[in-house]
Length: 362
Image 1 (cartoon, rainbow, N blue to C red):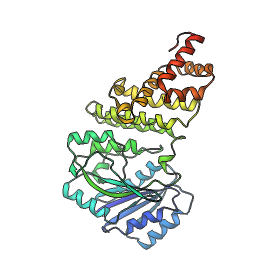
Image 2 (image 1 turned 90 degrees about the vertical axis):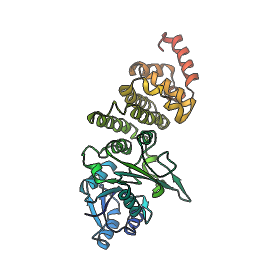
Image 3 (image 1 turned 180 degrees about the vertical axis):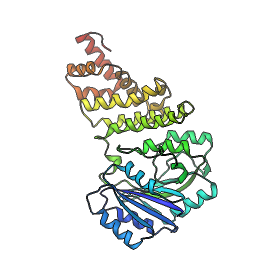
Image 4 (image 1 turned 60 degrees about the vertical axis):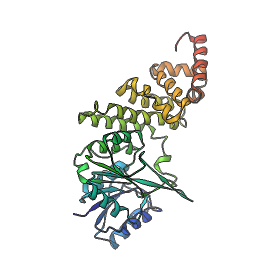
């Protein structure tokens, strides 16, 4: 059994994957297996992968599967990993030379099932350290610390998992959706018996690629809905929904509020549908309680907090009636955008015009 299995999902990364694989071949810890999963790509990535398999046959393994998305590619590798620990490295990112040795040794020393490190954002002309968790010093996470994880954006990268974390087949990245990270992280928090944080940059996260997932949100924006719903169903299945209700409410609310910023490039009916379906996740699972926590205010400030309240209120207007209302005003796109950008003024303007033309609707 190798010390560490490294799962590398790849999809059309011919200009990036060599850098990733080279960083793994140069690791100071050589007792590793690298499972490179080509998710049905159509470029020359596989030629580069094959070169590394030929050069390092004891370390690199290549798999080609039909396209199923980032989560499915990660799961494919996880299910075939034989190492004591598992690391996920996206094919356009790369590791520091001592990253695996450091993470493995620290996990062994502390007995951590999940060890979390810092990231390093890589721009075209500079790098920038990034802490994915709100801790200043190295530590084993207490119960209170673990609760704080739900108030932060999560990625499976820059972390090392004991294989026992994946013993439950439900602890996987949800396949077939965009942004599977939001679905996976809370699952790992629940099943990991011991979580440890190290204040060290180990993972280099490339955010320059034009098609990088952070930038491709509009067409697949509603993927956040099944991602969050599946994660909540996991907590219910494990009997932990009530015990973790406050933490889950913050996590879901945080994502719902964040998507307000991303729907503004959608137009017309798709924008309205996105707003309604995203807010429905929080409303159906937590009622009005999630907004009372002040999530929108704490993260984005007063304007967005008010915008969320208005948008959430509009969620309860029948969709046909709301669509007719916007058509009546004659400015469908501008009307919805105004309600998000200038919520109070837009609300009063719409209310006044509707009462004047069709009676009291709002």
